[in-house]
Image 1 (spheres, rainbow, N blue to C red):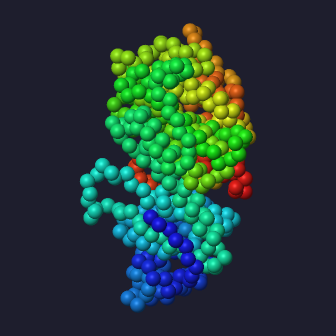
Image 2: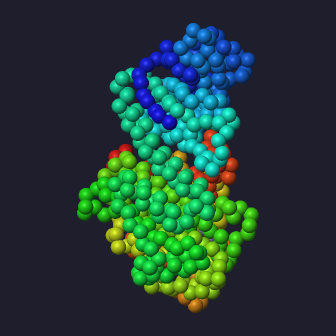
Length: 503
Ligand code: BES
Ligand code: MN
Ligand code: ZN
């Protein structure tokens, strides 16, 4: 869909639908008076009858009299102004977009003055609102035969109204930023939603390369032979059960000076996780096509950062593998020699994510990164701990974790810190090798991170376990079932601030 901005009053707008935010309670006399006038009294009748009180999430769609230039008015309840937040505004954007899409109203004009979070200001509010709209205006329907008469449609055009000319430039900037970010999120969603039969490690690698080529990002692929030559023993161990060979994807974005150290992003790219010989149960195994959600978030972030043109250097490293049971697969009890030289006893072949990440966390050292952040759908235990409301963040540097928590809050993608006290390392001590790949049932998310830490302790590092967030079981808050693209917004927010672009 396309966005445009124009200056003007809400009266006299020629549009299929004029969208207005209404706060609960008094203080909206001007706006409600205007709406009442345009709708020839229908608005106040709806208020007096109790049909509409502007409660958060409420909607009221009114058809205007024939002589009105606006065909309809959609009033969206925002709740109490004192309780209005960016998160609610983003959600309002998603809900109004899916409301309109369900009714095939594909063009609308929205008054921004009626939808501002006061303490954030216009620009931040517009970014959140636009994100909310764009993230609801997404479908993964390429495998569905056309049935245009049914279901919601995609939106075509939103015209955002500002009160004064002086606001036009800043609002356009905020829309551009939201569009770049959402392009990254939707790229990530497409990758996650792609079915496993199509999505081989090679497919993921080709998608990364073609995105990179279109966005002036340098791309390199390491194939199985090269990985063998360099000694990626842990990654290759996971890959050996699949017919489809692994790739290491390396992308470099150079927006900063050539001497500036890069931020390194690492994303778990298990294109399908059957569990290997430690086979998963059949129920919900289909969802394990999402086990490359970390890789998708990293690729989406690269796309967004390149489109925003952020002046910093970034390197993305993604191990792309498939975890399958077969006659060539690794067995419980096998011992692998990782790229670092440390040996790993594989007690459960379903704890494969940490194996491939171990080698990549060693590999990224060569870029002398200023920080390393990895994202992974790593543990079912994370869903037990936090459900589908937040991702876990752990690491070896409190400052970095604090910045990520803040970026999470601001972007609306929540993080929650779990401890990584040295004592947890005892749970991944092996009797026969340097380390083992499972730490038992207690604190599964933490012991997975304690395992990773053994390979990540020579630099500033944070780990995001996004197992509960990369996939949405059913459509909610105006956003569709399937891949969420979780992580892109946090990372972009973190990088924009790191850069001093935003205060
Ligand atoms: N990819 C899974 C974790 C996962 C589970 C992600 C559910 C999203 C939803 C991971 O590879 C895995 O299987 N982890 C095991 C580790 C265990 C064997 C130590 C788990 O969490 O059960
Ligand atoms: Mn697994
Ligand atoms: Zn996995």
